[in-house]
Length: 236
Image (cartoon, rainbow, N blue to C red; front, side):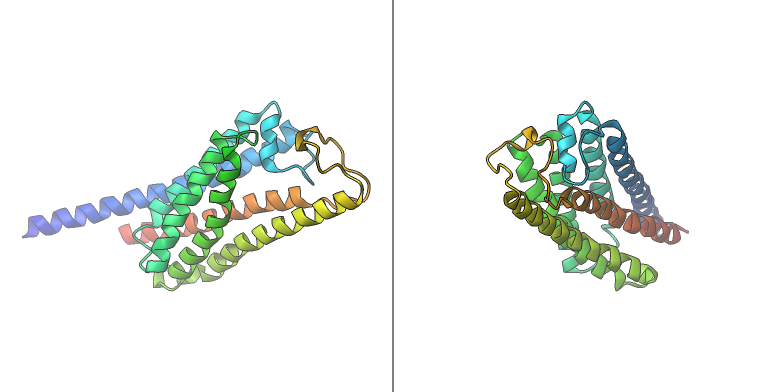
């Protein structure tokens, strides 16, 4: 009997240790993703960040850096889902974990299929909208448990910022299209052929797109950081 209990305890400790490693991996991958995004601004300054989308860096000389950024982004989501799987108890939270994995698939596809590939649009449709839903469901679920209650504000603030960033990107995109049309811009031209915008165009969509990437990764970092603390406490 004691041997069975000992084996169960060892199995539990092993699971906690793996979760802790996954949490740290998730945090490191999210940091890496943001560092690579920052590096692209230096390596490819020809892409104006005010109106060029992050995915357009694929058309520069350092498309491989963008691919690494997407890979790190996806890894951060998958590692986080593994790290907190045992911490999330509610049905809504479990749905959020599944959506987080799906969001990671979209992020990975963004790196595998660049902006010139037909599947890149599908990658965005998978990765962008599922992430905020996952973040909200997971954050609400975790914040209601005692070990996570101390991080409630950070969890909910960053989770809400994810869907706000989506609305900002959509809004700024609409504003740019409307003002571009009013300024006499050619809507039939390929985006890659447009090097400058006409006077009067309000172009903030590029910044909104980058804000989204930053916010998504910051939420992962907040949850992963707390998860490492919680699992460390559980193992002691």
